[in-house]
Image (cartoon, rainbow, N blue to C red; front, side, top):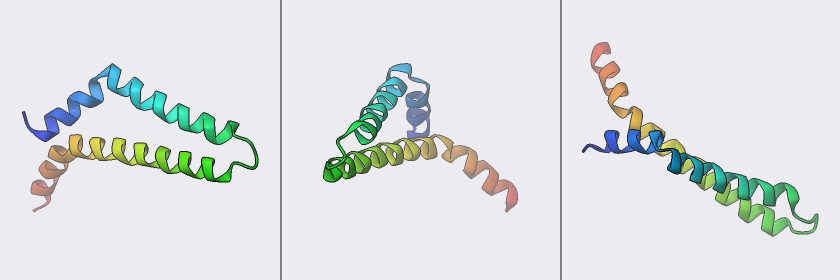
Length: 76
């Protein structure tokens, strides 16, 4: 199975999608619900949230890679 197919399967997997969303919600709730003085905690949570978002974007990119390649060949 190609990386494209594996990435597409992940994006169709309800468990994977729920897991990603739950993790994002955990970090968002900490960012918005933390004490005013806990600046470091919010920054750590924001870094983790961004990492999850970047990871998910890379999975989406891998899943769309074959579509991008097909379009590239049409242009050339």
